[in-house]
Image (tube, rainbow, N blue to C red; front, side):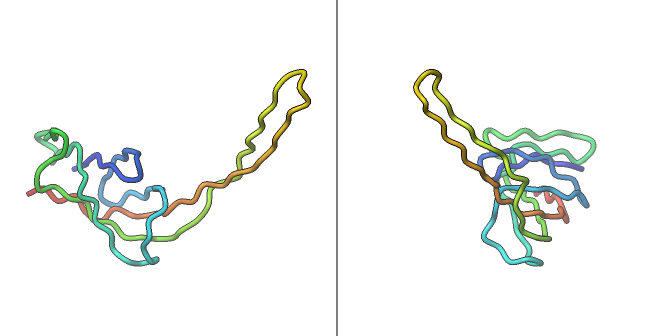
Length: 104
């Protein structure tokens, strides 16, 4: 059993027991979250594709922790103009464990 859902402008494949790093959510550690934007769902025998969403499908998960990804360097330059800018960026994330895929 699995499903594909959308959160934070990205799509993720969810299976029960799987840990995912998704864009930051405003939820406390240990609290449950529900994702209702399910784009595709399968119960192992048949695959249901939404147009655009699968009706009545939802994914339940539990927040494990919040964190920040490793730093990336953003460097801009223009040749022969003495223009250089160097900035760093760390993207925030929320790690969740999928508890169930529910199809109605």
